[in-house]
Figure (cartoon, rainbow, N blue to C red):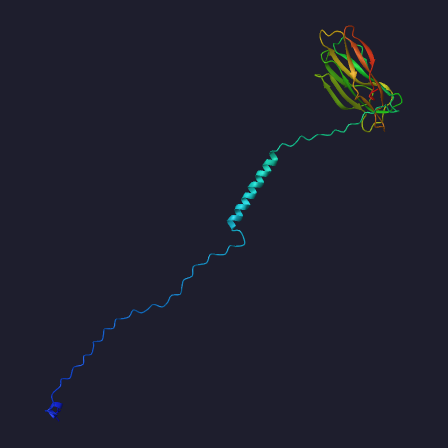
Length: 254
């Protein structure tokens, strides 16, 4: 069946042009870029909290410095000069008065000279009522007049024990101590305690003296103080070689 148009059905009707409807073109769709997923904000690394303890390096440094400081302090103390220590020497006090038991006498007696050039002086003792264990004497002389001075034990003490023997030729001093053996009994009586030998210097004239010093003492059994009553010095006449005894000051300072 053939299709008829409106014009053909109604030929008398004027033909009206039907406007064509223009459909706007659809704009091309641009391809969309996919949005990346949101990245969570990055957090900066937090600085570590200070530790309550010192780092190992710091502790080691402090330790080394402490050792160095201690060493320097030790050296400073060691190098500091110390004051000289005083040595205390115990001395037996010299009594102001003689003990009642002090009766012993000491004296210097010149021994008759022989053809020898060596002369001698004997240190004599008389204990009286004392029982003595030992004798110590100090004697001074003129070293410009008497030379080659020596001291030898006498015969008063049997098998004597020499405790001290010193001759100072520069200052002219004899220091000598002699006594009984530790197991021996004390002795009483008279005799020669020691013998002093010497030579006279050439061209020596006049007189010279051998003199006991206050430290001379006699030790008695069971007593602390000295049993010495008195000591007699000796004056030598160099011209005629005769001796003149002189009374000495006793050990008690009298």
